[in-house]
Image 1 (tube, rainbow, N blue to C red):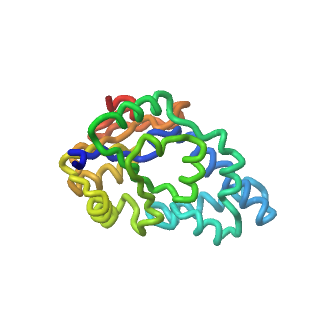
Image 2 (tube, rainbow, N blue to C red):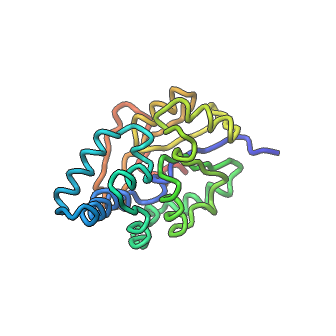
Image 3 (tube, helix red, strand yellow):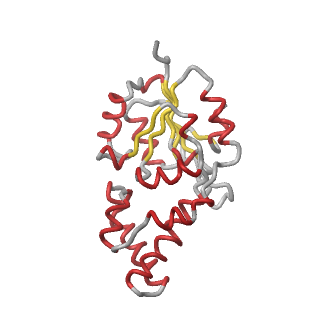
Length: 212
């Protein structure tokens, strides 16, 4: 018989977001600088400018879009720095406990599926979850209603019986709008506390370890 309820959460609430911040602020500009033979400062300015243009759209999350635009390979630096990919403190233990409960733990992420493969090879989070879905394979991002319509149907998710965690307020807002009343805003997605959000009226958790 199917498990009676689902818990959906983004990979970044389990993994330390420090890697993602380093990847986009250091590794991607470094690759662009080499490809265009410009300074790191100028390359980073181009990456930041592109990010502002694409923010909140599917191409923002698609590595292939960035690779084609800048003529770079963005998987190579991720592989070279894979040792920097880690769980948030206490996150693996939390996932282990959740995996033993009578619920489905589903990974819903905007992370590009190719980068997600690098992460899953480095940090064994897949062994603790029942399913996962990258927005880059679906054609919709979590900020869009179409994403939720598709994942609810694909994974037979009952939104009224589900819990969702994300550090992006726009995504939490959309999850609630689509029926997940128990949608929580994660306030501290990095181990070094370089990113700390305010609750701003949302249900919130410090991180995934506070879920149990």
